Image (cartoon, rainbow, N blue to C red; front, side, top):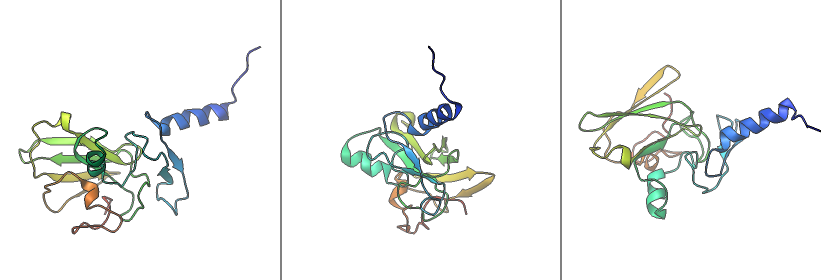
Length: 169
């Protein structure tokens, strides 16, 4: 006797596979009063590309000696003051142009995270400029940067002159 899987269950299974990603961990639905996008990372330090949106990726990977080495990494958030682990804007395009005028286009994943791995940018030269496009809106940093650790300045409250998170104007 064959059993038929109900369509709603199939949809739920498919969706959970999309937000879980590889390496464990997941994004879970939360109230939009908690996270503007209604999604939050709940996977702890399970190690995948969706992990810890809003965190300082480069510092964490360096301190722990785990995960890929990044030249530039950060999160595009929906608003300037999102809490750590709130998912950001999937699909945002981040264009990093290095000192040699080589442009790298990075696409934010389901957590809003974007990153340029060291192996993909062997000749990367600091300082760089950055601009972001999402939903027809484009914005850019006002000055060139000497660190690729976007989360070191783009915190909830902002540090070192940053206005908060990387987010649309």
